[in-house]
Length: 452
Image 1 (tube, rainbow, N blue to C red):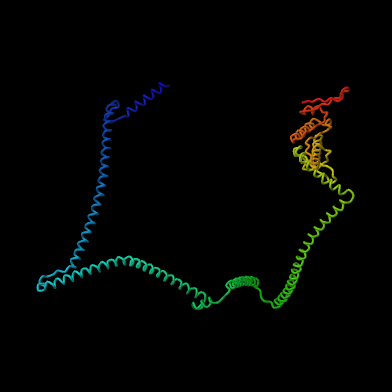
Image 2 (image 1 turned 180 degrees about the vertical axis):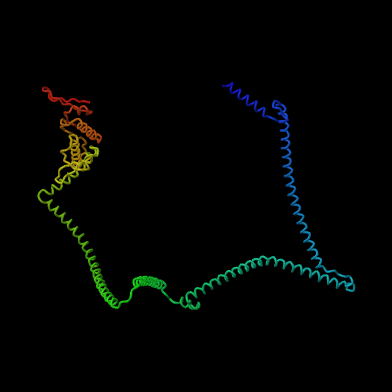
């Protein structure tokens, strides 16, 4: 494969050389090509150098052109100044007065001296006046310019006001022609009157509504009467019927007025009745309380009432543990007869008898009630005893019930209580951390052995 590829490349090179035609070069003369390439490179470098020089010359030419332009501006400014000075010189020469010797040949020296002094004083006065007038002119020139600007603004505003006044007069004339008034005096007379504008507007609005209603009624009547002729007998019948209807309407209106008055009276009476019902409810509640108290003081009623309260408190305190022991599934409550019942939250919170509990659950319920009773007695006796003994009948419990019993007793131990259990169940004995085993000996009697 490599030889074939090499042959293909050689063929391509030979074909390329056959197509290579350049009069100044030969395909095999590589040194000549390098010399010409080097020569062209030198020429390109020389062209670049000339281009850089040309660029520098152009920048210098631009700078000199700018300087020349500035010089021309300066020259023109000097020419303008020279022309202004020449004009000033001509003006000053026109102010000079040429004197002739013949005019003063016969005049005495003293007189000439006096004239010179007068002329000098006149020149000084003129110069002083010129300075004062120049200063005054300089002060008044900006004021004059500001006054001119102000006058121009006032004239412009005057023209705008005149146009606005013209437009307003045209609008007034148009409004007067539309309203049918003769002149502005009539308008002033109307405006000078003390009118209730809101009431008049309301009247106009009502009038427009009534007018629109009447027009609609007229249109309806015209549409109904189209193609019909007036029948006097029919008209009389309709008129009498209308009077009858008006009479009935008046009667109904009077009846409605009477009924509204009766409704108002009934509303007042209803409010009184509501107050009386509230008072009646209070009295009924008081009556029920009095009946309760009366029943309490008949026979053993008071004792039963107090015991029911005590049992409810005992049930509430026992539920704190029992609800937790059963993992929020069961709780205790008192029935209307004063018996304990079970609320089963897994059965939509329905109540059932305590006899339906399993052995372990019954033990938990009994233990919770016993602990609640012990805590109540302890709080009433103000005793701080924290030990608790259980003489059980665990022999009837299954394995699951025994586990529940042991977990319950362990939870009591976590409440800082000392729990003593009297039990014959071997599985429960093995799980108790510290125990006293009592064995009966016919010779020595009961023997106590400590088991760790």
